[in-house]
Image 1 (spheres, rainbow, N blue to C red):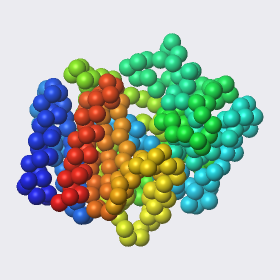
Image 2 (cartoon, rainbow, N blue to C red; image 1 turned 45 degrees about the vertical axis):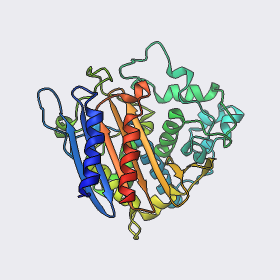
Image 3 (cartoon, rainbow, N blue to C red; image 1 turned 45 degrees about the horizontal axis):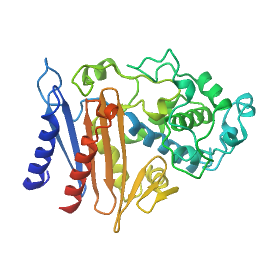
Length: 347
């Protein structure tokens, strides 16, 4: 466990977050020099007033993108695809022929680093039949293909960072086509089964469903869970702090393992946004004077998540909440995570 002063500060930060959110279940995990810890705050629900534990399941939203980046890394390492493959190479021929010239120039690397020029979501995504309580559920492969044929890029591929759920969904879809496996199965085969991350999944078993904490809007109302079709690679996974601590430890591991090369490739900067921020394969990388911090956050209608690690100090943090802070651009959880990571790195 961490030192008493660090634990006390983590408790203070967590209680500050919990005090502003009715019925919140806040789960915090950390790694410091190879040793991990977990702390739960709040309550699972009004009828179950115990705090969450390390096996409590949450939607993790866009942290899913890191898994998609790792699948890309794995498929590059085994020669199945190349980072600079055009998306045309991996689309059905009739779809590839329909792409505008600018879209033809998009590569897998562009998709993984949010430099494809694709918007966050397509215009076709915002149809009258979108369920705002579950917005990604009905956006299908056929709609994605139709949008790619008519979409206007925000910038030429490879020139500018533009965060894109559409682009990451497309990337995972292409990898799934190339590997001839459903996206969820592909992530489990390449990552979760190797790492024994049995609670990192999209489709929940009955037992896992019972451990899924209910999500809330920022005003404390219960929310619908989110479901995904073709954009699953942008945000569909659920997980636990226990599994994500295992995942963090694998990223920090400096010894050779069967998955080392996959993680190492994903960490390599592939696009420099500015002097302090670069992109790996889905990872955001803060470049500091003496070290790099790798991170990704996530948010769905009723959940917020943050995961980060510091290579130089061998520190890591994961925080999961069942409140939809991201829907109102509330960054309280992100700020708490960075503060905790700094504490773990300094002590």
